Image (cartoon, rainbow, N blue to C red; front, side, top):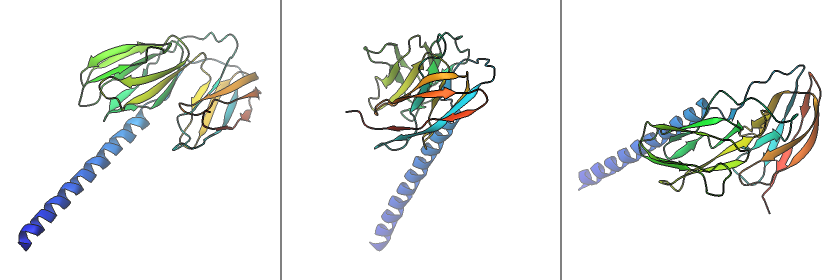
Length: 227
């Protein structure tokens, strides 16, 4: 009897150990995928004597201060060349990666399926960039070009727990915050601008910033829950 109990105990321990290893492997794969994909896609603009905007965004009552977007509402006439580079929102282990990607208007985003199951990526009917890619197999990829500036929620018809956002902006002057809330918008033409924020659950804030050529201006934000 003792041998049987010992054998069962050993088997259960081995199963739990293997499960923990697999969970660790999944997290490592996700983190590697997140690190390998860009969260900002914009066109290249030549600016004489540009300035820099930097700062921190504190996101209250959420897990971390990452995945907020800081952007300049209008620079000149907001008419810029369409980015040549494509954005990428991958699907792995039933997660969209990255969770938030900010792109300049006109950007094409590819949606590869790096998972082991089928997916169906779509945006809600009331979204300004409404689309439905249909169900497609592992290893396949489908593109969408985002032609209107707005937030675009990403959902999956097959897996209701999946969600992400594409934030489409009118000009190339924006940044997605790191987990500590830090951000930098560089190559900014000298001038006075309205700087705004976006977050999927927190209230947007704005402030005026004056950018001088060859200098760095700091602009910090504190984002709180929407009422």
